[in-house]
Image (cartoon, rainbow, N blue to C red; front, side, top):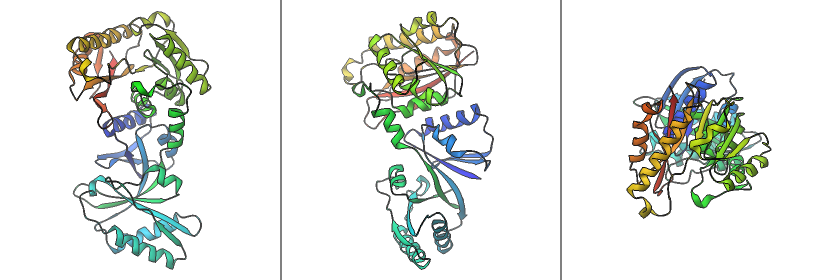
Length: 378
């Protein structure tokens, strides 16, 4: 069965997360094709697709590819009508189209399809409602799909090939993500707090599976530790700021996680507290520098941050087993990757190999941007 995984606003990181998750959980794929629309995967029909998708931070929708067409004409309309009727409970058919990136520049007769499909559904005894995709991206949001119980058809085109019709079978649980982001007792949004979805992607990029142990030596308010815990990992954390450690403790207790070992210590000396602990991964976002005043980004600050990251990685090598990963967010200022490159260039000397590529994550208009990097202990 072919599934289309549709990614959010960090497609490179989302793709890396999904690939790492499938590998670490030993989920066999028969084939895969990465396109501008997302990742097409041939997977066993008996897998628990929802369980996989619920564990991902970067995938916003999953669809089954139902059919391919040479042209989007009458056979496509007839097929879509039947598909909507088969996947409607009751006699009110609520449906809508999302136009994939591969068709964004194509003029499509969506209004005519809407009219023809509505007429055919009425003939079958349904009342109908068509939901128009608002926004420039031509996509129905997860919120709309879930709250209005929409049968969503995703339309796209394989490169140089046929058109495809996918039916959305899963959307990201925006309510649960919002609860852990805005409902937790301790948050510090004014200092550019790491979003839970990004934390989840980082934990998955590290190859974390249930029962493993994850360390965050710059734990802040505990976002990474929270997301690792949701995935079934054992978690440990530390921060140089005792107030941040207290915030992490409060957030973990709010999630009913009471067995997390926490310490107040510089990340460059954290190993002394864990001499008998074996970690499967270190996942962290260190100090990224000021995000509210570009004028503070002087050369000496860049060097200070570079030394912080290199000294930390060098220290972590002393207790992280070979083959295990460090996933770390590093800053760039207005797409200047000087700091990121300086750390990557030192990877071998520090005892690591740099894994594949830099995965950017930033919100539009952001001056200081996150760059997610994975290092493997050698």
